[in-house]
Amino acid sequence: MNRFQRSVAALAVLTLWGEGIVAADLETAEEIRDCARRNFPEKTSIQFIELKSRDRAGSERVMDARLHWKRHDDGHVRLMIRVDGPQDIKGSAYLVIENKPRDVVYMYLPALVRPRRIVGGGSADIWGTDFSHEDLRLLQMSSAAFGSERLADGEVAGRPTYVVAQSSDPEAESAYSRIVSYIDHETCVSLQTEYYDANDQLHKRLLVNPETVAQVNGHWTAYDLEMTDIGEETSSWIHVKHISLDEDISARFFNTAQFYKN
Image (cartoon, rainbow, N blue to C red):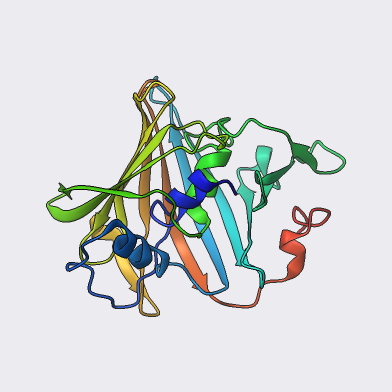
């Protein structure tokens, strides 16, 4: 994972777990970063999700998928996402492996004999949604922040937020030049994340419904998220149906030769 991805991964996450910390008194970007980092599980996460997309014409597509996330002993993370339905894409899967200088991504489609490695294309969409490979990496992978800058506080859906900006490192192979996160004072959940392109124009916006933020085993979880592509005028939604934290997960889900198998 490059340094820019490390800087935003601790703040812009798909599901966020808190530990009863009081976030309202944080002062520096580093303190906000540390609060966000504590939102991640120690070792593993399993999430069953509904993924819905809507195009300009209003046509919708709904998918069921599962996410397996694991932090290994060396601190590196692996993420697997697999489609359970509908039937025409059932079994399609991606495996994302945190690596330096760039992450390694494998894709499997039922029509393929074996998985294939994806070279580049981090900005390409996942199954026709507004989420890209890079978005999934940034939403899911925990690591230390780099180059965070605290901006003036803001507000999302009537809730006070810290505002933290990260700029892309010159070495980063990112679709975004800058990412701005609005972190809830109470829970350290990122309620809004803005993604800016190479021309510093707002490209995408991720929103969390604060009313769906709840605790699971004492940890805060965001259950409903909406990603909007500003230029394309399209949106996609993730609804977390079930989540398990820090349970044993078979190593095969993160093996390049086995991740796509039932």
